[in-house]
Length: 470
Image 1 (cartoon, helix red, strand yellow):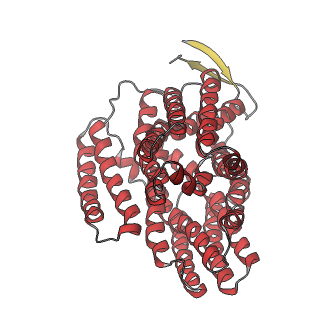
Image 2 (cartoon, rainbow, N blue to C red):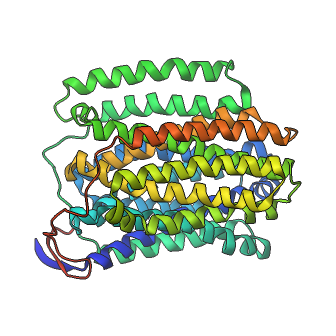
Image 3 (tube, rainbow, N blue to C red):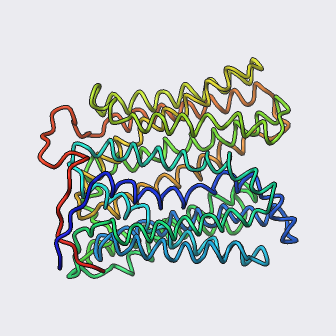
Protein backbone atom coordinates (compact mmCIF):
# COMPACT_ATOMS: atom_id res chain seq x y z
CA UNK A 1 0.00 0.00 0.00
CA UNK A 2 1.26 3.50 -0.80
CA UNK A 3 -0.06 7.03 -0.68
CA UNK A 4 -0.45 8.76 -4.01
CA UNK A 5 -1.78 12.21 -4.90
CA UNK A 6 -4.01 12.58 -7.94
CA UNK A 7 -5.36 15.60 -9.77
CA UNK A 8 -9.07 15.05 -10.51
CA UNK A 9 -8.74 16.82 -13.86
CA UNK A 10 -5.81 14.61 -14.87
CA UNK A 11 -7.73 11.50 -13.84
CA UNK A 12 -10.72 12.67 -15.87
CA UNK A 13 -8.87 13.31 -19.11
CA UNK A 14 -6.67 10.24 -18.92
CA UNK A 15 -9.77 8.06 -18.50
CA UNK A 16 -11.47 9.83 -21.39
CA UNK A 17 -8.54 9.16 -23.73
CA UNK A 18 -9.49 5.51 -23.67
CA UNK A 19 -13.20 6.23 -24.05
CA UNK A 20 -12.51 8.34 -27.14
CA UNK A 21 -10.28 5.71 -28.73
CA UNK A 22 -12.91 3.02 -28.26
CA UNK A 23 -15.76 4.94 -29.92
CA UNK A 24 -14.31 6.92 -32.82
CA UNK A 25 -14.66 4.13 -35.43
CA UNK A 26 -18.42 3.57 -35.02
CA UNK A 27 -19.83 6.10 -37.51
CA UNK A 28 -17.18 5.89 -40.21
CA UNK A 29 -17.27 2.08 -40.05
CA UNK A 30 -20.92 2.19 -41.11
CA UNK A 31 -19.97 4.15 -44.22
CA UNK A 32 -17.21 1.65 -45.10
CA UNK A 33 -19.34 -1.53 -45.01
CA UNK A 34 -19.51 -1.86 -48.80
CA UNK A 35 -15.72 -1.56 -49.15
CA UNK A 36 -15.16 -4.07 -46.33
CA UNK A 37 -17.55 -6.57 -47.92
CA UNK A 38 -15.81 -6.25 -51.29
CA UNK A 39 -12.34 -6.63 -49.74
CA UNK A 40 -13.30 -9.77 -47.81
CA UNK A 41 -15.35 -11.33 -50.62
CA UNK A 42 -18.57 -11.12 -48.64
CA UNK A 43 -21.86 -9.21 -48.81
CA UNK A 44 -23.02 -6.03 -47.11
CA UNK A 45 -25.82 -8.00 -45.39
CA UNK A 46 -23.24 -10.28 -43.72
CA UNK A 47 -20.74 -7.53 -42.94
CA UNK A 48 -23.50 -5.48 -41.29
CA UNK A 49 -22.98 -7.82 -38.32
CA UNK A 50 -19.60 -6.11 -37.86
CA UNK A 51 -21.68 -3.34 -36.26
CA UNK A 52 -24.75 -5.18 -34.96
CA UNK A 53 -23.07 -8.14 -33.20
CA UNK A 54 -20.51 -6.06 -31.23
CA UNK A 55 -23.25 -3.66 -30.11
CA UNK A 56 -25.27 -6.60 -28.81
CA UNK A 57 -22.20 -8.01 -27.04
CA UNK A 58 -21.41 -4.64 -25.50
CA UNK A 59 -24.96 -4.18 -24.24
CA UNK A 60 -25.15 -7.67 -22.73
CA UNK A 61 -21.72 -7.73 -21.07
CA UNK A 62 -21.61 -4.17 -19.72
CA UNK A 63 -23.63 -4.81 -16.51
CA UNK A 64 -21.52 -7.88 -15.69
CA UNK A 65 -18.28 -6.06 -16.43
CA UNK A 66 -19.43 -3.12 -14.34
CA UNK A 67 -20.19 -5.45 -11.44
CA UNK A 68 -16.73 -7.01 -11.71
CA UNK A 69 -15.32 -3.50 -11.38
CA UNK A 70 -17.49 -2.87 -8.31
CA UNK A 71 -16.08 -6.03 -6.70
CA UNK A 72 -12.45 -6.19 -7.84
CA UNK A 73 -11.69 -2.53 -8.52
CA UNK A 74 -12.44 -0.37 -11.53
CA UNK A 75 -8.80 0.47 -12.24
CA UNK A 76 -8.02 -3.22 -12.72
CA UNK A 77 -11.01 -3.74 -15.01
CA UNK A 78 -10.16 -0.60 -16.99
CA UNK A 79 -6.62 -1.85 -17.66
CA UNK A 80 -7.71 -5.41 -18.48
CA UNK A 81 -10.51 -4.18 -20.72
CA UNK A 82 -8.42 -1.81 -22.81
CA UNK A 83 -5.50 -4.22 -23.08
CA UNK A 84 -7.78 -6.94 -24.42
CA UNK A 85 -9.63 -4.52 -26.69
CA UNK A 86 -6.33 -3.18 -28.09
CA UNK A 87 -5.12 -6.67 -28.94
CA UNK A 88 -8.41 -7.52 -30.63
CA UNK A 89 -8.30 -4.22 -32.60
CA UNK A 90 -5.00 -5.31 -34.14
CA UNK A 91 -6.49 -8.73 -34.87
CA UNK A 92 -9.45 -6.98 -36.52
CA UNK A 93 -7.06 -4.98 -38.73
CA UNK A 94 -5.61 -8.27 -40.01
CA UNK A 95 -8.94 -10.08 -40.45
CA UNK A 96 -8.91 -12.40 -43.47
CA UNK A 97 -12.64 -13.16 -43.68
CA UNK A 98 -16.00 -11.76 -42.64
CA UNK A 99 -16.24 -14.39 -39.90
CA UNK A 100 -12.90 -13.50 -38.32
CA UNK A 101 -13.71 -9.80 -38.61
CA UNK A 102 -17.05 -10.19 -36.83
CA UNK A 103 -15.56 -12.50 -34.20
CA UNK A 104 -12.68 -10.13 -33.46
CA UNK A 105 -15.05 -7.18 -33.20
CA UNK A 106 -17.32 -9.05 -30.79
CA UNK A 107 -14.37 -9.96 -28.56
CA UNK A 108 -13.07 -6.39 -28.71
CA UNK A 109 -16.43 -5.04 -27.57
CA UNK A 110 -16.72 -7.71 -24.88
CA UNK A 111 -13.41 -6.46 -23.45
CA UNK A 112 -14.51 -2.84 -23.92
CA UNK A 113 -17.68 -3.51 -21.92
CA UNK A 114 -15.71 -3.01 -18.71
CA UNK A 115 -14.04 0.22 -19.75
CA UNK A 116 -17.04 2.55 -19.84
CA UNK A 117 -18.46 1.86 -16.36
CA UNK A 118 -14.95 1.65 -14.88
CA UNK A 119 -13.78 4.94 -16.38
CA UNK A 120 -16.92 6.70 -15.18
CA UNK A 121 -16.65 5.20 -11.69
CA UNK A 122 -13.00 6.23 -11.39
CA UNK A 123 -13.70 9.79 -12.50
CA UNK A 124 -16.65 10.15 -10.13
CA UNK A 125 -14.57 8.81 -7.23
CA UNK A 126 -12.27 11.86 -7.36
CA UNK A 127 -14.99 14.52 -7.65
CA UNK A 128 -17.65 15.65 -5.16
CA UNK A 129 -21.24 14.57 -5.68
CA UNK A 130 -22.41 17.97 -6.88
CA UNK A 131 -19.95 17.77 -9.81
CA UNK A 132 -21.36 14.54 -11.21
CA UNK A 133 -23.60 16.20 -13.80
CA UNK A 134 -20.57 18.12 -15.10
CA UNK A 135 -18.56 14.89 -15.23
CA UNK A 136 -21.28 13.02 -17.10
CA UNK A 137 -21.59 15.99 -19.45
CA UNK A 138 -17.92 15.92 -20.35
CA UNK A 139 -18.21 12.17 -20.73
CA UNK A 140 -21.10 12.55 -23.16
CA UNK A 141 -19.29 15.26 -25.11
CA UNK A 142 -16.28 13.01 -25.68
CA UNK A 143 -18.29 9.92 -26.60
CA UNK A 144 -20.35 11.86 -29.15
CA UNK A 145 -17.56 14.02 -30.58
CA UNK A 146 -15.20 11.07 -31.06
CA UNK A 147 -17.31 9.36 -33.79
CA UNK A 148 -17.70 12.74 -35.52
CA UNK A 149 -13.92 13.12 -35.57
CA UNK A 150 -13.79 9.59 -36.95
CA UNK A 151 -15.97 10.66 -39.88
CA UNK A 152 -13.84 13.71 -40.65
CA UNK A 153 -10.44 12.03 -40.25
CA UNK A 154 -11.28 8.39 -40.89
CA UNK A 155 -13.02 8.85 -44.23
CA UNK A 156 -9.99 10.37 -46.01
CA UNK A 157 -7.67 7.80 -44.38
CA UNK A 158 -9.79 4.94 -45.72
CA UNK A 159 -9.78 6.52 -49.19
CA UNK A 160 -5.98 6.87 -49.09
CA UNK A 161 -5.21 3.46 -47.57
CA UNK A 162 -7.73 0.87 -46.38
CA UNK A 163 -10.48 0.37 -43.81
CA UNK A 164 -7.92 -1.64 -41.80
CA UNK A 165 -6.08 1.54 -40.80
CA UNK A 166 -9.03 2.46 -38.55
CA UNK A 167 -8.37 -0.48 -36.26
CA UNK A 168 -4.61 0.04 -36.25
CA UNK A 169 -5.18 3.60 -35.04
CA UNK A 170 -7.76 2.39 -32.52
CA UNK A 171 -5.38 -0.24 -31.15
CA UNK A 172 -2.60 2.32 -30.76
CA UNK A 173 -5.02 4.70 -29.00
CA UNK A 174 -6.11 1.99 -26.58
CA UNK A 175 -2.55 0.98 -25.75
CA UNK A 176 -1.77 4.64 -25.12
CA UNK A 177 -4.75 4.74 -22.76
CA UNK A 178 -3.39 1.71 -20.88
CA UNK A 179 0.06 3.26 -20.50
CA UNK A 180 -1.35 6.56 -19.23
CA UNK A 181 -3.86 4.87 -16.94
CA UNK A 182 -1.28 2.62 -15.33
CA UNK A 183 0.32 5.70 -13.77
CA UNK A 184 -2.49 8.24 -13.57
CA UNK A 185 -5.62 6.41 -12.37
CA UNK A 186 -6.33 5.62 -8.70
CA UNK A 187 -8.06 2.49 -7.49
CA UNK A 188 -11.63 2.55 -6.27
CA UNK A 189 -13.14 0.70 -3.35
CA UNK A 190 -12.97 -3.08 -3.68
CA UNK A 191 -15.29 -5.67 -2.13
CA UNK A 192 -13.28 -8.87 -2.37
CA UNK A 193 -15.47 -10.56 0.22
CA UNK A 194 -18.27 -10.44 -2.37
CA UNK A 195 -18.44 -13.25 -4.91
CA UNK A 196 -19.39 -12.61 -8.51
CA UNK A 197 -22.90 -13.80 -9.33
CA UNK A 198 -22.10 -15.84 -12.45
CA UNK A 199 -25.49 -17.58 -12.65
CA UNK A 200 -27.30 -14.26 -12.38
CA UNK A 201 -25.01 -12.80 -15.04
CA UNK A 202 -25.77 -15.66 -17.43
CA UNK A 203 -29.52 -15.38 -16.87
CA UNK A 204 -29.46 -11.61 -17.41
CA UNK A 205 -27.32 -11.99 -20.53
CA UNK A 206 -29.63 -14.65 -21.98
CA UNK A 207 -32.75 -12.66 -21.09
CA UNK A 208 -31.68 -9.33 -22.53
CA UNK A 209 -29.45 -10.82 -25.23
CA UNK A 210 -32.20 -12.94 -26.75
CA UNK A 211 -34.61 -10.00 -26.61
CA UNK A 212 -32.12 -7.62 -28.23
CA UNK A 213 -31.21 -10.16 -30.92
CA UNK A 214 -34.87 -10.86 -31.68
CA UNK A 215 -35.75 -7.18 -32.01
CA UNK A 216 -32.62 -6.51 -34.04
CA UNK A 217 -33.29 -9.29 -36.56
CA UNK A 218 -37.04 -8.69 -36.79
CA UNK A 219 -36.42 -5.65 -38.99
CA UNK A 220 -34.75 -7.88 -41.62
CA UNK A 221 -36.50 -11.25 -41.37
CA UNK A 222 -39.88 -10.31 -39.88
CA UNK A 223 -41.49 -10.85 -36.47
CA UNK A 224 -42.77 -14.30 -37.46
CA UNK A 225 -39.34 -15.76 -38.19
CA UNK A 226 -38.62 -18.81 -35.97
CA UNK A 227 -35.43 -17.29 -34.54
CA UNK A 228 -37.22 -14.05 -33.65
CA UNK A 229 -40.11 -15.93 -32.04
CA UNK A 230 -37.66 -18.12 -30.11
CA UNK A 231 -35.85 -15.05 -28.80
CA UNK A 232 -39.10 -13.45 -27.68
CA UNK A 233 -40.09 -16.65 -25.85
CA UNK A 234 -36.72 -17.29 -24.20
CA UNK A 235 -36.27 -13.72 -22.98
CA UNK A 236 -39.12 -13.51 -20.41
CA UNK A 237 -38.35 -16.98 -19.09
CA UNK A 238 -34.70 -16.07 -18.50
CA UNK A 239 -35.56 -12.70 -16.96
CA UNK A 240 -38.11 -14.24 -14.59
CA UNK A 241 -35.50 -16.83 -13.64
CA UNK A 242 -33.02 -14.01 -13.07
CA UNK A 243 -35.41 -12.14 -10.76
CA UNK A 244 -36.17 -15.29 -8.74
CA UNK A 245 -32.51 -16.23 -8.44
CA UNK A 246 -31.40 -12.75 -7.39
CA UNK A 247 -33.79 -12.86 -4.42
CA UNK A 248 -32.06 -15.87 -2.89
CA UNK A 249 -28.36 -15.35 -3.69
CA UNK A 250 -26.17 -13.76 -0.99
CA UNK A 251 -24.34 -11.35 -3.30
CA UNK A 252 -26.63 -10.69 -6.29
CA UNK A 253 -25.44 -9.24 -9.58
CA UNK A 254 -28.15 -6.58 -9.27
CA UNK A 255 -29.83 -5.58 -6.03
CA UNK A 256 -33.54 -5.74 -6.87
CA UNK A 257 -34.25 -3.48 -3.88
CA UNK A 258 -32.10 -0.78 -5.50
CA UNK A 259 -33.71 -1.24 -8.91
CA UNK A 260 -37.17 -0.84 -7.36
CA UNK A 261 -36.25 2.67 -6.18
CA UNK A 262 -38.22 5.25 -8.15
CA UNK A 263 -35.13 7.10 -9.32
CA UNK A 264 -33.41 3.94 -10.54
CA UNK A 265 -36.22 2.27 -12.47
CA UNK A 266 -37.42 5.56 -13.92
CA UNK A 267 -33.88 6.37 -15.08
CA UNK A 268 -33.61 2.96 -16.74
CA UNK A 269 -37.06 3.20 -18.33
CA UNK A 270 -36.32 6.69 -19.62
CA UNK A 271 -33.49 5.29 -21.75
CA UNK A 272 -35.93 3.15 -23.71
CA UNK A 273 -38.10 6.13 -24.65
CA UNK A 274 -35.16 8.45 -25.26
CA UNK A 275 -32.91 6.12 -27.27
CA UNK A 276 -35.79 4.46 -29.15
CA UNK A 277 -37.05 7.49 -31.08
CA UNK A 278 -33.61 9.15 -31.09
CA UNK A 279 -31.78 6.26 -32.80
CA UNK A 280 -34.73 5.48 -35.05
CA UNK A 281 -34.68 9.15 -36.04
CA UNK A 282 -31.08 8.75 -37.23
CA UNK A 283 -32.00 5.88 -39.56
CA UNK A 284 -35.21 7.59 -40.69
CA UNK A 285 -33.33 10.80 -41.47
CA UNK A 286 -30.70 8.97 -43.54
CA UNK A 287 -33.32 7.04 -45.54
CA UNK A 288 -35.42 10.18 -45.99
CA UNK A 289 -32.48 12.23 -47.28
CA UNK A 290 -31.78 9.52 -49.84
CA UNK A 291 -35.41 9.01 -50.85
CA UNK A 292 -36.92 12.49 -50.72
CA UNK A 293 -33.86 14.65 -51.43
CA UNK A 294 -31.89 12.12 -53.53
CA UNK A 295 -28.70 12.93 -51.61
CA UNK A 296 -25.48 10.92 -51.97
CA UNK A 297 -23.83 9.09 -49.06
CA UNK A 298 -21.32 11.89 -48.49
CA UNK A 299 -24.09 14.51 -48.53
CA UNK A 300 -26.14 12.49 -46.05
CA UNK A 301 -23.10 12.18 -43.75
CA UNK A 302 -22.63 15.95 -43.78
CA UNK A 303 -26.34 16.52 -43.09
CA UNK A 304 -26.26 14.18 -40.10
CA UNK A 305 -22.94 15.50 -38.73
CA UNK A 306 -24.61 18.39 -36.78
CA UNK A 307 -26.30 15.79 -34.59
CA UNK A 308 -23.20 14.44 -32.79
CA UNK A 309 -21.64 17.91 -32.77
CA UNK A 310 -24.68 19.51 -31.12
CA UNK A 311 -24.86 16.53 -28.73
CA UNK A 312 -21.24 17.12 -27.70
CA UNK A 313 -21.69 20.87 -27.21
CA UNK A 314 -24.92 20.48 -25.25
CA UNK A 315 -23.55 17.65 -23.11
CA UNK A 316 -20.49 19.69 -22.18
CA UNK A 317 -22.76 22.47 -20.93
CA UNK A 318 -25.41 20.31 -19.24
CA UNK A 319 -23.88 20.90 -15.80
CA UNK A 320 -24.20 24.67 -16.16
CA UNK A 321 -27.84 24.32 -17.19
CA UNK A 322 -28.56 22.11 -14.17
CA UNK A 323 -26.92 24.65 -11.87
CA UNK A 324 -29.13 27.37 -13.28
CA UNK A 325 -32.46 25.63 -13.87
CA UNK A 326 -32.26 22.38 -11.90
CA UNK A 327 -32.03 18.79 -13.12
CA UNK A 328 -35.73 18.20 -13.74
CA UNK A 329 -36.24 21.29 -15.89
CA UNK A 330 -33.05 20.60 -17.85
CA UNK A 331 -34.03 17.00 -18.63
CA UNK A 332 -37.59 17.86 -19.59
CA UNK A 333 -36.36 20.62 -21.92
CA UNK A 334 -33.86 18.19 -23.40
CA UNK A 335 -36.40 15.46 -24.11
CA UNK A 336 -38.83 18.04 -25.51
CA UNK A 337 -36.03 19.23 -27.79
CA UNK A 338 -35.65 15.67 -29.10
CA UNK A 339 -39.39 15.53 -29.78
CA UNK A 340 -39.47 18.90 -31.55
CA UNK A 341 -36.31 18.05 -33.48
CA UNK A 342 -37.77 14.79 -34.82
CA UNK A 343 -40.98 16.57 -35.82
CA UNK A 344 -38.93 19.29 -37.54
CA UNK A 345 -37.07 16.70 -39.61
CA UNK A 346 -40.43 15.30 -40.70
CA UNK A 347 -41.77 18.72 -41.64
CA UNK A 348 -38.51 19.45 -43.44
CA UNK A 349 -39.08 16.34 -45.55
CA UNK A 350 -42.71 17.32 -46.18
CA UNK A 351 -41.74 20.86 -47.19
CA UNK A 352 -38.57 19.74 -49.00
CA UNK A 353 -36.60 22.18 -46.88
CA UNK A 354 -32.96 21.37 -46.11
CA UNK A 355 -32.65 24.16 -43.48
CA UNK A 356 -35.61 22.79 -41.49
CA UNK A 357 -34.09 19.30 -41.60
CA UNK A 358 -30.76 20.66 -40.36
CA UNK A 359 -32.46 22.52 -37.52
CA UNK A 360 -34.31 19.37 -36.52
CA UNK A 361 -31.16 17.23 -36.62
CA UNK A 362 -29.33 19.74 -34.43
CA UNK A 363 -32.21 20.05 -31.96
CA UNK A 364 -32.46 16.28 -31.51
CA UNK A 365 -28.73 15.97 -30.88
CA UNK A 366 -28.66 18.89 -28.44
CA UNK A 367 -31.69 17.55 -26.58
CA UNK A 368 -30.12 14.16 -25.96
CA UNK A 369 -26.83 15.79 -25.00
CA UNK A 370 -28.56 17.92 -22.37
CA UNK A 371 -30.75 15.27 -20.76
CA UNK A 372 -28.34 12.35 -20.48
CA UNK A 373 -25.79 13.76 -17.93
CA UNK A 374 -28.36 14.63 -15.22
CA UNK A 375 -29.94 11.18 -15.57
CA UNK A 376 -26.55 9.48 -15.16
CA UNK A 377 -25.78 11.64 -12.10
CA UNK A 378 -29.16 10.85 -10.52
CA UNK A 379 -28.79 7.12 -11.16
CA UNK A 380 -25.28 6.89 -9.70
CA UNK A 381 -26.38 8.75 -6.57
CA UNK A 382 -29.39 6.45 -6.10
CA UNK A 383 -27.36 3.27 -6.70
CA UNK A 384 -24.49 4.35 -4.44
CA UNK A 385 -20.78 4.43 -5.18
CA UNK A 386 -20.40 0.69 -4.55
CA UNK A 387 -22.82 -0.09 -7.40
CA UNK A 388 -21.80 2.55 -9.98
CA UNK A 389 -20.38 -0.04 -12.36
CA UNK A 390 -23.43 -2.28 -12.59
CA UNK A 391 -25.75 0.77 -12.49
CA UNK A 392 -24.20 2.47 -15.51
CA UNK A 393 -24.02 -0.92 -17.21
CA UNK A 394 -27.77 -1.38 -16.79
CA UNK A 395 -28.34 2.14 -18.11
CA UNK A 396 -26.40 1.23 -21.24
CA UNK A 397 -28.29 -2.06 -21.61
CA UNK A 398 -31.70 -0.38 -21.42
CA UNK A 399 -30.50 2.29 -23.86
CA UNK A 400 -29.49 -0.40 -26.35
CA UNK A 401 -32.87 -2.09 -25.86
CA UNK A 402 -34.63 1.16 -26.69
CA UNK A 403 -32.42 1.76 -29.72
CA UNK A 404 -33.00 -1.76 -31.07
CA UNK A 405 -36.76 -1.49 -30.57
CA UNK A 406 -36.98 1.99 -32.06
CA UNK A 407 -34.99 1.09 -35.15
CA UNK A 408 -36.76 -2.24 -35.71
CA UNK A 409 -40.27 -0.87 -35.26
CA UNK A 410 -40.18 2.71 -36.50
CA UNK A 411 -37.60 2.34 -39.29
CA UNK A 412 -39.50 -0.65 -40.66
CA UNK A 413 -42.49 1.61 -41.38
CA UNK A 414 -40.70 3.35 -44.26
CA UNK A 415 -38.63 2.32 -47.28
CA UNK A 416 -36.56 4.12 -49.88
CA UNK A 417 -39.77 4.41 -51.92
CA UNK A 418 -41.79 6.10 -49.14
CA UNK A 419 -43.27 9.52 -49.78
CA UNK A 420 -42.51 12.72 -47.90
CA UNK A 421 -45.87 12.51 -46.10
CA UNK A 422 -45.10 8.96 -44.93
CA UNK A 423 -41.80 10.12 -43.46
CA UNK A 424 -43.64 12.96 -41.75
CA UNK A 425 -46.10 10.55 -40.17
CA UNK A 426 -43.44 8.16 -38.83
CA UNK A 427 -41.26 10.98 -37.50
CA UNK A 428 -44.28 12.49 -35.73
CA UNK A 429 -44.83 9.07 -34.13
CA UNK A 430 -41.19 9.08 -33.00
CA UNK A 431 -41.72 12.58 -31.62
CA UNK A 432 -44.73 11.37 -29.62
CA UNK A 433 -42.61 8.60 -28.05
CA UNK A 434 -40.04 11.22 -27.04
CA UNK A 435 -42.84 13.02 -25.18
CA UNK A 436 -43.29 9.86 -23.10
CA UNK A 437 -39.59 10.13 -22.28
CA UNK A 438 -40.18 13.68 -21.05
CA UNK A 439 -42.89 12.43 -18.68
CA UNK A 440 -40.83 9.51 -17.34
CA UNK A 441 -37.52 11.35 -17.02
CA UNK A 442 -39.24 14.39 -15.54
CA UNK A 443 -40.32 12.34 -12.52
CA UNK A 444 -36.77 11.37 -11.51
CA UNK A 445 -35.26 12.86 -8.35
CA UNK A 446 -32.20 14.79 -9.49
CA UNK A 447 -29.10 16.05 -7.70
CA UNK A 448 -29.68 19.70 -6.80
CA UNK A 449 -26.24 21.08 -7.57
CA UNK A 450 -27.30 24.61 -6.69
CA UNK A 451 -27.51 23.73 -3.00
CA UNK A 452 -25.30 20.67 -2.56
CA UNK A 453 -22.41 21.35 -0.21
CA UNK A 454 -18.92 21.29 -1.67
CA UNK A 455 -17.10 19.09 0.78
CA UNK A 456 -14.58 17.63 -1.64
CA UNK A 457 -11.68 19.32 -3.42
CA UNK A 458 -12.19 21.53 -6.44
CA UNK A 459 -11.46 20.03 -9.88
CA UNK A 460 -7.96 21.47 -9.91
CA UNK A 461 -7.04 20.50 -6.35
CA UNK A 462 -5.05 17.30 -5.70
CA UNK A 463 -6.89 14.22 -4.51
CA UNK A 464 -5.26 11.96 -1.95
CA UNK A 465 -5.96 8.27 -2.03
CA UNK A 466 -4.44 5.13 -0.62
CA UNK A 467 -3.66 3.04 -3.67
CA UNK A 468 -3.00 -0.66 -3.91
CA UNK A 469 -1.13 -1.47 -7.10
CA UNK A 470 -3.03 -4.13 -9.01
